[in-house]
Image (cartoon, rainbow, N blue to C red; front, top):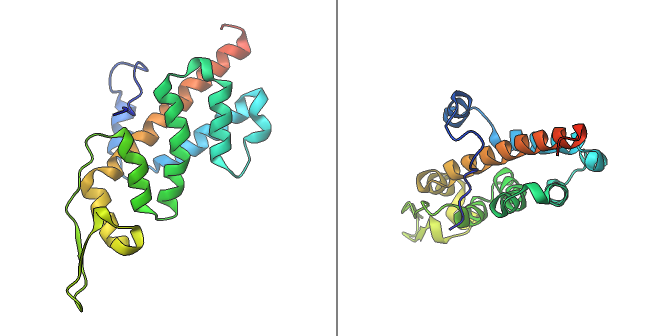
Length: 177
């Protein structure tokens, strides 16, 4: 399993990190996108792309621009976060969970079952599409399985990565490389 934890930024959990990770009102996917777009705007070669509608090509361009400063798992994180963001925003929870699973070995089947009260038919939500398991079923599954917490952790790691790359950009601009 790949780990989505970004290592070596501070070595310890900061008060800010604890506050962000425990505050459910923080929208990490939005913060991640903003940090990526600000990084692109700060990077001379990417400025024209910073306002592009698509996040995936922008993250790919950042990965190319900063390839020497990225570990393999950080490169992979930049690759997958835009897709996870899209699946969450478009309420495709089954697909979002499928994209999160390779990064988190702690996800488990929460055992949520959808029951049709008219027919008695049952469907295990974890093995169904979002349409079959329905929105409420997938919210229960994603929340109970750890997928939503894992997504928040991955977006937080993406934010930390974007902040680290912004510092790398500053170094490049000042000639301290």
